[in-house]
Length: 236
Image (cartoon, rainbow, N blue to C red; front, top):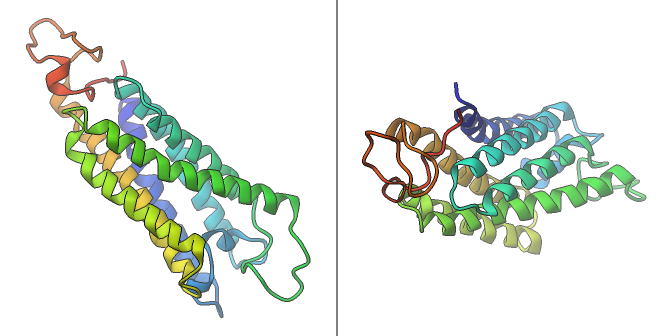
């Protein structure tokens, strides 16, 4: 299996396993409604079975790093979008390794934050920003490319929906349902990643034998790089 296709699979598997992790982690927190627990709290030191959510963060991050790197090889001309995906992946791994102190944000006996809680907060902020910016940048970039144009609108719609949900989450106007809004914001952003990964997986079957450089073509193949878009870039 080519590296690009393996990385594209990671762009599907990572979000799926992350979603499964927060569903399982939420169900394990007896006595606490899911709406009251943020995703980071599921990996906190006082959470029940925090390793489930920790693994979810790390797996998603590693898959996003590989997916973003591969996406950077198949998009032409270069775009900041793939590197935003990589940045989100690195920050997500850090958010999983440097955990929050407590399951809940407030409670009796909470006297301050540890250094790893502070690192987690910074990493989470970077991950949110990059996860949101990546599909917005990529969606706009895809509109200019015939090969990617079919996914441009879905990616932008999902990204904008995630942005709205994230704004509501940050405002806390829907407390005590903030945990649900956060899950919706993250799920919409990850859905955009999945849409891009599915398109990336589907493309090589249509573009075998094409030279990835714009304006070039292999002998015996009359399809130009402009006609096929930039999706024909493949590993060798």
